[in-house]
Length: 158
Image: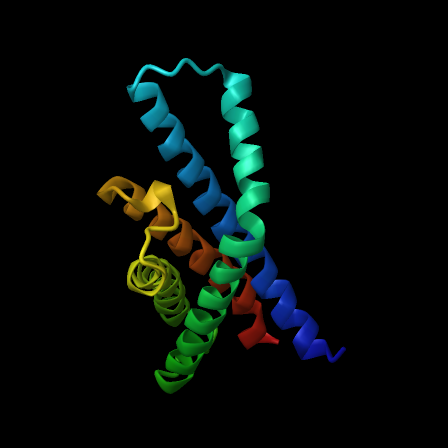
């Protein structure tokens, strides 16, 4: 495997993992809060168990969808960064670059979730059915983009 491919994977995988895990946890918490609101009694063990089971259950589908979504978003953002000449290692351009990747991550999650409804005719992620839940999912994407920008920033300085 070429050095640049290994580096690209090293930059992408942690950001994807952060985005997926946050999205999964936010989804679980949203569902658990809904259950608590209708009077279902859940202890800490129930919460932790559901969060763990949701992460495992969502990984093959939602995890894969998130991976493709972030891959597209980061590829497009890399193109924009190069066009705007923001790949220099200066403080101001580094901040702009970080903001671009973070916003790209958040927007990509928004587009992904909005596209699921017409394509699948269902809101696949129950935790994204409310405005707060949708915002939390987008925040997970924002965090993924931020992490990616921090890891891949070294790409432009080497």
